[in-house]
Length: 186
Image (cartoon, rainbow, N blue to C red; front, top):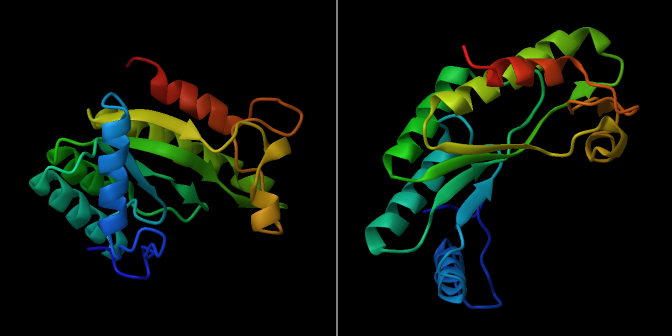
């Protein structure tokens, strides 16, 4: 079960823990039997306490017949990313439940004056895309925007920016080419 540090109670429907998520998924499936239902969260990409709680929740949902189709991983990173092997292990155990994995909000923020870190940032983007392609149940990759011009990063993390694959002038950055390279058939 997700603890209070990773989930919130819902006073509106009178459920605590993951009960309101379960009920919301049941209502959503009843409203649209064809909708894909994902639990989406941040900070749970590698195996850690939060990803363990999400895994246990999903496993419990599956065992009780609660509709769930996948887990979304937001992946808001700095250049200090968790090891790819740890992210891969987490993806594989989620896939082992028969769930899809989707990378839903990928961005890699840099300090504003860190143009020298663009190569590292590009490597991270390429590694994440390659990892998704490696895990068969990883079905989507979406960045949290496409141009630094409209990125949420500078507002949320003052002094940081340059998190996306296109510069503010809409020019492709090294991470754009890294994404292309990872998507190119080998």
